[in-house]
Image (cartoon, rainbow, N blue to C red):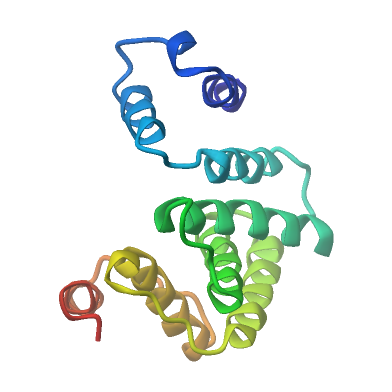
Length: 172
């Protein structure tokens, strides 16, 4: 129901959107500054796929990864900067990594992580400029788990946090 509400909000002209909702106000401000809301609609499409019954086939995993991953990465990058092929592949890998981290079905979690690992390896060297630093943090987390061959049990450990903070500040 909430996905339908957001789709309705994002497809309405600004003057027809409800007032008093802080996130809608931020979206309106962004759109007035020329930000393309298309990636947000892709994110909604990705989230909508979570309503499909398990188990998923490869087509469903691929569609989810493309919609959610490219939607989030594309929105953060802004409408004026296209994702490179490697960034697009990393975005898809991140979406499957995040899915695997939160999926309660062990088989689906394993398949998602296997697909994530394959996609991330195909991405090659993924680089972002300073404005893409939050996305490069996502990529570093994925890379760490792909390199280790397993999902990190606890991302909230001090060692992981210190690496994220250091990368956020320095880009290293």
